[in-house]
Image (cartoon, rainbow, N blue to C red; front, side, top):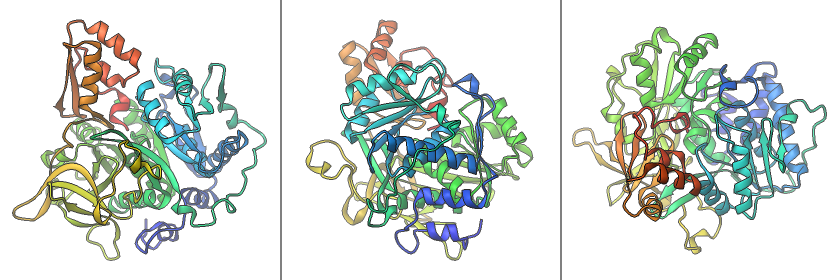
Length: 527
């Protein structure tokens, strides 16, 4: 990977807002490397969802993206329509997101464990027009969930799904893989007279003190986050990377989708976690870079599954950035580690490990990548607020709340503060000797489990409405950051009631006697 590469130069925010869109990045790669492998599923795909593992070249992926875009347009969905996407970590997830963008629409990826209550709240807030999901993941039927959600969200016109045995009323998408004729995609030039990269590309969801908050980013802001991770990790051009992290958040896209596109390489997908399958993918696919949750990376290293330089680099996602400073030294001399501290949906800070395998110090001020190099790209800026919290601004940080006028609605919204800074809510201090930033705590009142964030008092209210004597609280967890622990006289009854309400399964699991490992089902540590 070379800083002077034309694609990186076009996507770089260093000279102001880029004018290249995410779809244009993909198109350039597909033209340059049509026969190269673009996407590959894990070999155990059939154990958790429909269809055999998919392997697509850039030409095949380009055709599928065009097929998805054409169908969405033929369904009568307009430019800038918001399309919800809820899929496991498989090729269709990436293809659906790129298909939505090619259609000139806005992708709204939902975390996989969102159930009825979460999905209805999220999609109703943003006026989603359609939802793309799948037949099932494990034993759970996501296509039926999609139909229930659509029945409650007035704006949703279509539920679409990949997979088999779909309910009546669901628009099937599997046939697009074998379609002989593509639906035409109307040109967007007339509808977008200004810079297309300045249009909203994706909406993700955070949790603030008032509840669920939609966070909208345009192409430029998304590319800035991905470019920062790519440059700091020294990801090679045409890299072969394996990710266990789904693109259902800003961090998920910045760690997986965008570095893959900007490097023009191969993206191997793993729906976590099957250790033997993961190790086989590392070996058989000649994986150069693994993208993993930070605690999982250390567990794999301890188990000897990152030995002998396969993969040669690890990008570690820290959803609980306050825990990064407490990690052990990285002892895998043949494997380069880049830590990525994630501050909810506000932004992220990538930093390669320093001398001796200890976490690198991060200074207040500009966030540049690669750090310490000539011509480094500025992707953001860090400061400490008067109340002692981490705030970010810059090219990767959203510049507007969504939807327009939300500030007058009385609903919780993404707040852009004075000078463009966004308060992440994470507490911090300045190291007395180095003046570096030290994150000291998570946002108060918010429980983070893997890629899921919950407002604790909202969950407690739901539980108390079912059983006034039941309790629910959050505790630290070494693997997924935190975990929920519940107590009730009749656990079976409260579990059934929570399932009926349609809350996240992690909340239901709090009322079971489970191990720490059991509290972290695959999607919780992958999003």
